[in-house]
Length: 95
Image: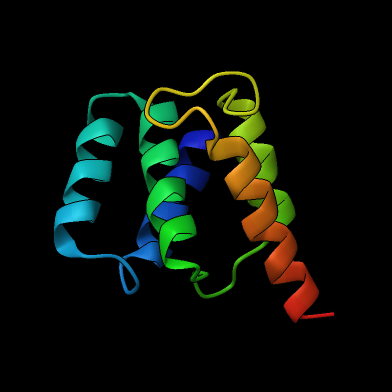
C-alpha cells in the first residue's frame, strides 16, 4: 500500500524535478530502499519550494512517518523539519 503511494508521489513529481533527480529516486525505489527514495524526493522538492499537482500534505506526512523519516534520515538530518516547514507553507498558501 505505502509502496504504491510512494510510486504515485514519484510520478506526480516528474513534471517538477529533473530527469537526473527522478532517475536517482527511482534507483532507490527499484532497489526497495523506499525510505531513501522518499527522502531524496523530499530533499529536492523542499529545495525547490514547489509542490506536485494534487499534493496532500497529510498523506505525504503519513508516508514519511511510515518510512520513519520523522525519526531517522540517511541523506539530510534535518529533512523532517524542512519537510514540515515546506508543508506548513503549502497549507498557509491555500487556506
